[in-house]
Length: 86
Image (tube, rainbow, N blue to C red):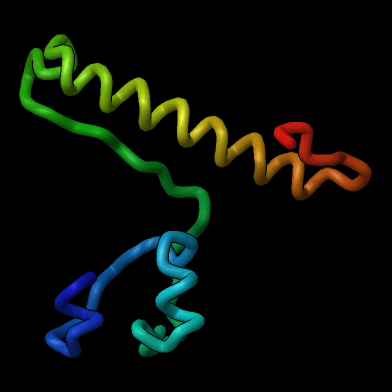
């Protein structure tokens, strides 16, 4: 992303992660081409790596964060729901 923002090339990314950069103009969408939303993300490491405490902790954090984002998106898409975190 730094290289793309510095004018050194292009990047392929999920636009949701870079909305601030797109709004500010630090990044632009050069053409109308999008990948289907029905794709997944994968966390990969070397064989046996998930047994390492640091990698397991990162995996657990990542899963918790993705669940939080998914719950927030579902609540935002459901009429009549309110934010119960405040």
